[in-house]
Image (cartoon, rainbow, N blue to C red; front, top):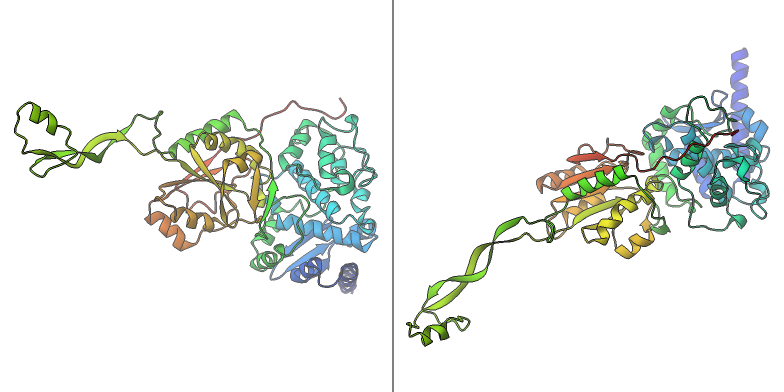
Length: 483
């Protein structure tokens, strides 16, 4: 009897949650369609805040106690649900080989800022403010500053390590204006590392994180679930652009966005240089290798007159018989090999956003010297001229499809023998026919992956060489709270 009452109460909680969500969302909006695609909402006290559960059909799990405490407004409940959906869509647990607490803080900081900026109307405000404090680090990264957006009070120097105010100004710009210098995951992670976070014996105030960070396997099942994936593919292209360009997606309308030229470690530069040299043909002025080729020359003597025979007048002056003429032809001679460039395909999908500034610094010197041509790809391939590369101006749909790279490389003229792909490995599975053609045409794929995010599973059967670069970032001096 008690168990039956408990089930009834849980069902009632779920119905109340659905009613609240439907009541706060206008009909025919992308949010309503998302919730319908998720196919269900269930109240559950087994999770701290919210999570997506994927069994036969995906559904949203929401803790009713958390909702009762922090989601007084229906719009706040909506923000909680959208926060979890963005975690799943952006596949945060797959961005790094081992996701730690500081990664989760960086993920929540980016998503909370994006949702606050996307839904900045008064009725949405107050949710993130209520669950985290504005005067303690790192909690202040997970909520808007006091007075935002009109009169934000950004943190002072005493509230966090150097650079905290700058990060907050970029996460929450005054007046909610558009900015081109949105913070990257790595910049927030560097800030947290300066505070000593991620190290043992460091005591700090625990922030409140949303979503199911404790169960990475649950999120992995959600991403791998075909029903959920198909639903998200049809939705992402219809959604309004997220204020902060983050994460990985299945592709939407093409758009321009600006990154920046960052820095990279000396070890990463050397490893990339070694790999790039393997993709280059011999170059004049550097390589002295020669090959035997057929070139125009004197093929022999004959009776056919040749007006270009410069020895005729000399033979006549010497009284030598003038019936034989030099005949043109092709002769073998040692000549320099034809210089070639490396073909570099740069992944500019959503999951690469935090890595692209470092990778651009690796590529730029070789494009500037004429040793490489760069092609950016997401769900299509586009040539990236030097001027655009210097401006760090990218063109992307946000998704990733390795098949567009294979088609472009296989159809290249002249025939391409080697191609270098700079990616985090989340490229999708190559089509079997394209993979077979790649092997038949002896096209050697060099897959170069940054250490910060390297997934080899999807490229293992395609790339003949997979290289994981050393860490791209540089270490900074530690900063400890309380010192």
